[in-house]
Every structure is written in C-alpha cells, then in structure tokens.
Length: 246
Image 1 (tube, rainbow, N blue to C red):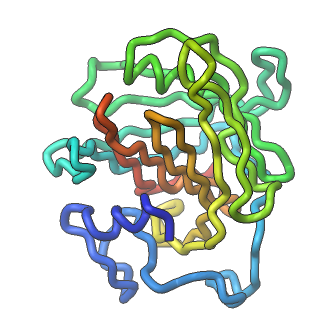
Image 2 (image 1 turned 90 degrees about the vertical axis):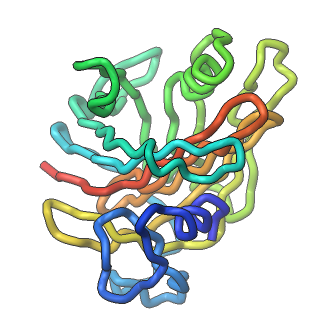
C-alpha cells in the first residue's frame, strides 16, 4: 500500500479501515485487498489503459488539509469538484486534450474556478499541463514556465522511475516519479451506487515535494491526490467521494 493511502486509512475523521459492508461513503482503500488475480471485476488486471472521460462527467472529492506533522486537520474538510467540459481540445501544441473545470468549495470566493488540462495516453501515461508550475506557484509563489508534465507513467514496469521535470528556477531540483507496484481496491459512489474501483498509483518526489496520485481507468477516475507537508508548506488530501458518468 502506498504511503498516502495507508495514512488515509489511519487518519480519516470518522473513517474505518474495515472492508466489511462499506460503512461510509468516503473513498477508502479496502484493507488487505491486493491484486491476487481475483479482484471485484473477476479478472486479473496488472496495467492501466488510457482514461476516457466524457463531457459532463463530474468528480466530487472529500478534501482535508494536513498540518505540519502530516496529520489531517478535521475542521478543514471541504468538497471541491471537477467537471469535464471538453475531451478533444487542443492546447499548448497537443491534441486530444481533456479539459476539466475545478470548482473550489463554498469556503472559497463564490464562483472561483480553475481549468486543468490532461492528456490520457492509451498506454496509461498521464500528462498534465503546468502541473509542476501550479504546485510551485501555490507553495512558494515562484513562477515557472508551464509544460506538459508526465505525472503518471503506467507504461513503465512497477517500481520504475522517470523524470517529471524540474521544480525550481535553477533546474537542479528534479521531480521524479515512481510506479507503485500494488493494485488496490477502493469504494466510492458511481452514479449514486457504491462501487469498487481498482486503484493504481504513482509517487512523485523532489527535495521539497512529495505527491501521490492513484487513478482508476474502468471507470475512469482520480481516486486519491495527496501532497505531503514539508518544511516549506503544509499538504492536503483529496479522496474521491462520488463520480457521475454521462
């Protein structure tokens, strides 16, 4: 189990690590469930294919901030959401771009939105435009030139690593990604029905950044997005609560 999902099991307010009867709606890794060849789909799956969203798909997250000790701040809970509004965009020299509007929770200024742009390759690799630039600007107030950053490389073998890009103005602090080997099972709502998702994860790290991203391709979803706290800034945790497919 990845570092992120392990902490989520231990720390979610009101959560439970019991597989049991799916006691709560938050996305929760099912303890003890690893890929033994007989997952909920009834077939072994070792790799991720390209995520295929449809315009109108909506992902609602449960979100918390971390304190300086990487413990969840229960009072910080919010419910941001993403809405897919285009799946065949062209952006920054790339075609077949999926554009997603990111809506801030009610605690933020009303109507505040941002746009996320992804490329989901058929081999499972995921690129996000300006991923590193967004993170560095938010954490440090430093402006970096945005680029297409490969935030997941499921085309590589388990435990393989790759260079995502540089996370500072000097070009010396390289953000590197690692493919996590274990498949995990998660529970979230899919069109109003509790559903088991297969989760596949990557870890991204540099001198001042630790990130975990876990996705599902069938159905397509971002399941966990976690940024660990560091001496520079506190982190956060997003767990998928529900996915509405169109």
